[in-house]
Length: 139
Length: 106
Image (cartoon, rainbow over all chains, first blue to last red; front, side):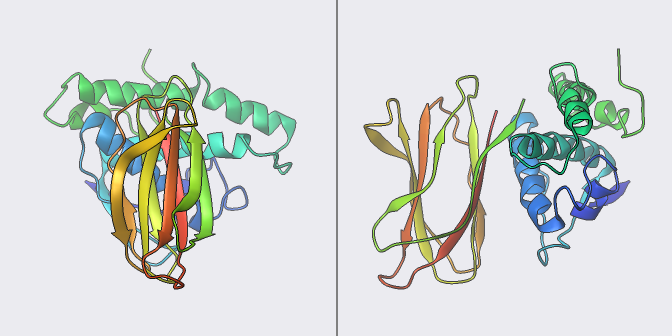
């Protein structure tokens, strides 16, 4: 199965909003995430293409899972590193917790990377397919 | 864990090479990846320099050309340089381009 990876699809995960980071600002971060995933775990995911603000790329479900997770980590990290005051202290704390060493996004990303690197399959696809967005994190 | 470690938006070139995005790479990072985009103005040239001390720099990524409105995803630099400097210049003198660049490290 495939999914269309877009900035809107990342926003739809409801971790960062359009007012936090606009689609045109999120797209370069998605491309960074794709590049890192390709380099780090040896996948060959295509980059976004099309008109800025509505760029798309079709990816496998499991590729969507790992790229979207890393995109959120990169985006939250970038938002936290600014002096932007749109986020409440509570929201900043929650976001920081998600990308901390034991945070949900960090653990999810590391689990997916490990699944691929451990050779669960030729591409690791079966392993990371088990970690779709709404699944509970592995213990 | 990967992090965005730098970005520059619509940096205007000059006729000679000048820094567009200089990074002090966090010590735990072993790889750095640059993505570049020319903002539909003019062709530009770019290269990436590395340094151990922020004084003496050497070429890490050789000069290449980025055409008007094109983008490039550079292969990750797989060497632990403490300092990296993305430099840009106009491909043709007096015909300045604009470069947006993002860098991530991990």
